[in-house]
Amino acid sequence: MIAPLPDLLLRPLVTAALAEDLGLAGDITTELIAADRHATAAIVARQGGVCCGLDLARLSFASLDEAVEFRPSCHDGESVTAGMTLATVRGCARSLLSGERVALNYMTHLSGIATATAAMVAEIRRVKGGESVRLSCTRKTLPGLRMVQKYAVRCGGGSNHRFGLFDAILLKDNHLALMGSPAAAVAMARQRVGHLVGIEIEVDRLDQLDELLSAAVKPDVVLLDNMSPDQLRLAVGMRLAKGCLSVLFEASGGVQLSTVAELAATGVEIISAGWLTHSSRGLDIGLDFRAD
Image 1 (tube, rainbow, N blue to C red):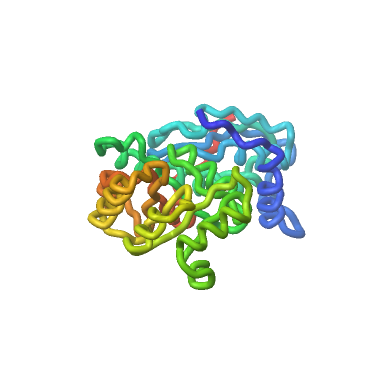
Image 2: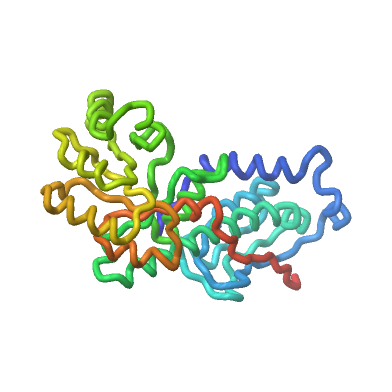
């Protein structure tokens, strides 16, 4: 099981989403329902996938009405089938109706990310040695949702890249355009940061990689950007020949479900895909009211 995110971090997301939905006048449609009407509803998966976002759903209802009962039938990171009940909610019908959309928006979006991640991880695992290859997300996240989108990737069996500009150095092509050679940039970075800060550098040519592997100060990770499988294999061979096995290789650029297995077979340790967080298709999940 994936360690859940604390409510302290999730509550602001739910509060902002509810405030956006309720606006200045509240749920004027749901006010047509009698205030003392109680109901029971089930959050149901309309298709198979990986569940994620249960705590956000729980908080969506609890923020409106602490008396609402929320009973999960599974946990985040669990594979679910079409028609499966993910959670049951019971309480004031108005509260259930008003919290429905925010709860489902978070669950469909995050479950979609977890499901897409799980499919990619499964492709990697069928390759010999694929169990040692990590699938990673990137910083290409929707504003304000990075924490929960990266959590969804973990629920799908993936791993997280850096969370922001503050927790690791990543020297990309635009940095190198202003800083000079790759080796000089890495040396400068190592002088500036503490020993616990990782350094990664992006290259798109093998001659750049050769320079890095020959330098006295080496990066922790090299991002091999938009390289073909043949180029990646040459890169892995170059690292072996130079005895730089402590330098990890990350393959990135245009990674898709149809190509990830071939990339994993080249010998890289990490494969990253930005679309997991910014473009994954949501998992179809609904809220079904039941006779009370």
